[in-house]
Every structure is written in C-alpha cells, then in structure tokens.
Length: 117
Image 1 (cartoon, rainbow, N blue to C red):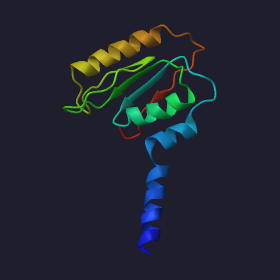
Image 2 (cartoon, rainbow, N blue to C red):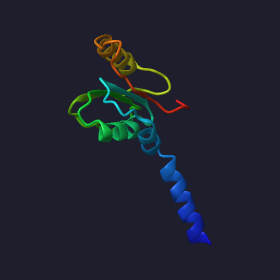
Image 3 (cartoon, one colour):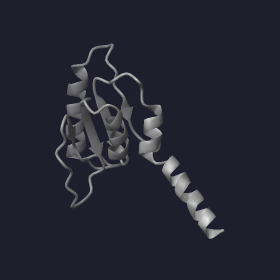
C-alpha cells in the first residue's frame, strides 16, 4: 500500500510541475519573445525553450542568496526579489518593456507566470 501511495504522490507532483503544465499550454507558433517571471520562471522557461529553442527570452526568477544564474544563450536571466520588488525588479521591468516595445502587433508574446505569484 505504501508503494502505491508513494507512486501516486510522485505522479501527482510530476503532473502539476510548472514545466509540465506550461508545456501543455504553449502555442504551436514560434513566439517573437518569451517572458517568464516569478518563483517558477526557470521551470516554465525550460518547457518553452524545449519547444522553441531559437526564441529569445527574458526570465526574472526569484533571487536567491548565494545562487549564481548561468549566462543564457538567446536571452537574459535577471534574478529579482519576490514578492517585495527591489532594484533588479525595476531593471527587469525596464528591459522587458524595452524588448516588448520593439515587437509588432502581430508578434506572439507568451508571458509565463504561476497563477499564485
């Protein structure tokens, strides 16, 4: 019984993981830019980049003390405070606004964020 419960729990976790949920709802058309923000930014971005590896992106994950984020090909990762914004939050917003202002009305712009953030 314990093995069955453990397997069920793990299956539930996998099915509700941000990357899994994001992958189910991505568009078919390649986006002009992907913006991913919040605590699950990197998980959601991973799913989007798997489907659209050539798409440029901006990710704003929650800043964590002592954690270094890798340099990203085709995009920017700007860690910022959450839920209380900091200077990096303002910088990220400015970068996103600048990037979005270069898009055309017909360009696809998925914005990825968890519903509770």
